[in-house]
Length: 284
Image (cartoon, rainbow, N blue to C red):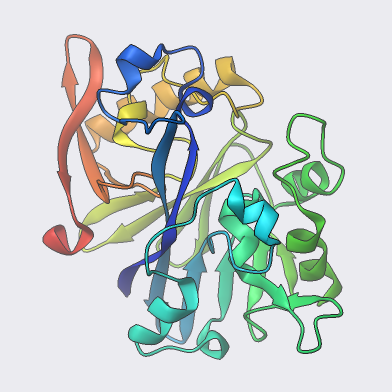
């Protein structure tokens, strides 16, 4: 097995929305905001080479939305999903599996593109299976008013229409061996049945954090996003995970932290707190 971080670009979101009830004077110490109260966030994916499988975890925001849509998110940087995939020597046709932690636009938008004559949409990865879970799919295709702006039909329905959609069965909160050395934790605070991959890699447990822990600034328990549909549940899920991650020395791969790619945790008198931060290649 070989794993590659895959940057798909940066965007901006409101700092208050990203930290919920935590005051700005507190959260801006780790995530400084600009004059519009916007903070920088990354959209990291992960690419896993494993035998005859090439697995992509999450796909960024993509480029098919309107200029008006993108104007709200201030995309920046030279990174792109396909560009960085090609730099690693791969093409979209090489990807065998697209694992989507959840179907918010900044996690799945890059997996769907306009078709050739721009009359409709199609999968970017035409030979891949697209993995979701049935609970979340139903949640996303009939969205509640709170999340409706995050679940865009053009990002979601073409997956099913293509015949490439597959569901991972949820049997409790933790499912083993989705792929070899690849387990999944299900959490429901951010959105229904978000999937958190746990990958056994070079003697470590590497966890793709998705939106359970967007950045190192979100480690303290009350630091929960305003976007979460069940924030009290997020706190419970996060507390349980952080204690386990500290005890078992997990390596956390941060999808949205624009500065820190990976981190570990340490136990303090205040509970789990940030240990070390590092680039993926510094450890692996």
